[in-house]
Length: 184
Image (tube, rainbow, N blue to C red; front, side, top):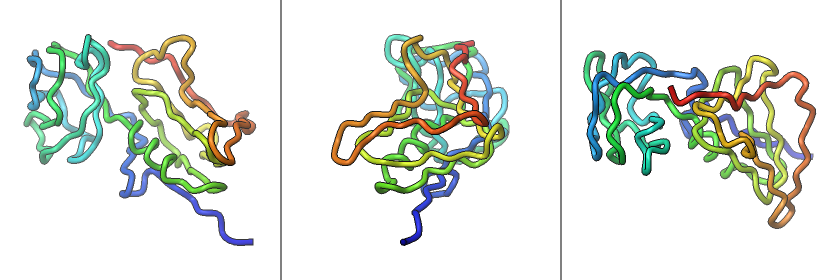
């Protein structure tokens, strides 16, 4: 029997933070803005994915990436530009894309490992069409929605469609997931 591959999305290949980094926009930003003045840049880094509730299309969640160097006291440079102007909105490091990339890259039968930390999610994670094990560090690992998902939406969707796919949740007695974030 061979070694089971482990995909750790805190690995630089994927870049998840697991630190629930949050700040607020300082003042207002207009639609199309790529320079976002924030109250603090602490915890943010170039290439981090970010989410800004209310700044996406039709006032939804903006999802983009920091494209410039992060310097204390300077605005964050993001791409693409925000879709809707906002004032004082929260800005989060968004772990959704790095985690989803690790899940998508994982091969059949492998482990996607959630190291201890609180992971900010702006969208549902999908495991589709392949058998995987999702493992964390018990109560030290949290998946937390940055805004409340619709009541019928789970943070993690297991989809058995596709070759070799099945959905069977493991015991989660030592795991916690939260779907109670707010847009404030």
